[in-house]
Image (cartoon, rainbow, N blue to C red; front, side):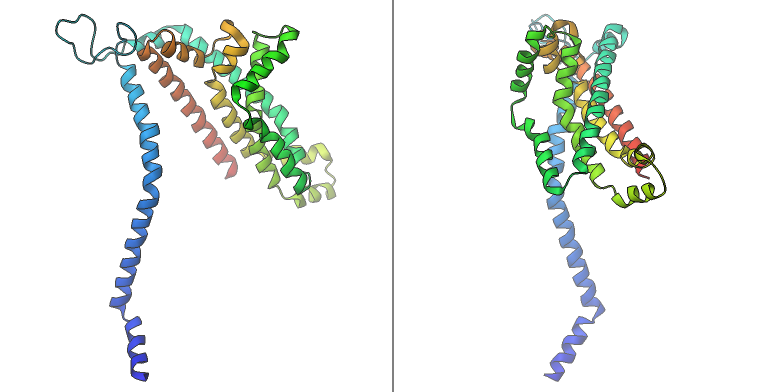
Length: 300
């Protein structure tokens, strides 16, 4: 027995055996990491990269004779254009109407984001300062509208605004946009404000800072990351929104999302719709990158 114990101890302390075990464990870790990472990568490829490539290819095509996309190669005996072209990009970048619509959409999205911030910050601050049980109930009330269908909520605003003759106006569009996106601003702000150390406010109070000074010099700077995160969550979907302007604003309040929808469903000019979609995507990516850099700068 004593000899077996010595042999076992020497076996475990053998550097060759330990190295083999290390390589085996490293191989298992690599296989596990590969198995875990494959599904999200496949999801990104099939639902992000591949659709983006399809949209890029569609934007370089000619529109079909009866809508859709023209063929890439000419068919003998059939008249019509075929192949690839940059005409859609030249048309979009050469006509200021589309730039104006994009700027108008960005302005409406900015106003929506600003109003959501003004309304959401006091509410998030109130929720963060309540006892835990009350906080959970108030957060539930904030996310409760998501349990109802989006179109039903918009049609409810049609009924509400109808008697006051406020429908089909920019005011109705802003009201609907703020209502839809307000929870997306409240939740990141609440998550940020809840993590603030109350001892910092107590220390500032002991040093003679009044309520406004404590908020402006302590609470607000610490909540900037939540403000930028909430602003990005509101601005990006608001920029491409088409349902609210169409239902509450009418034809006079067209946004870039409405224009894209019309190209695909009504005009059936898929190449032009794809070009506008890519223009909107580039704008959204630029906004997201700016927000991410600003948030990272504030965190560091």
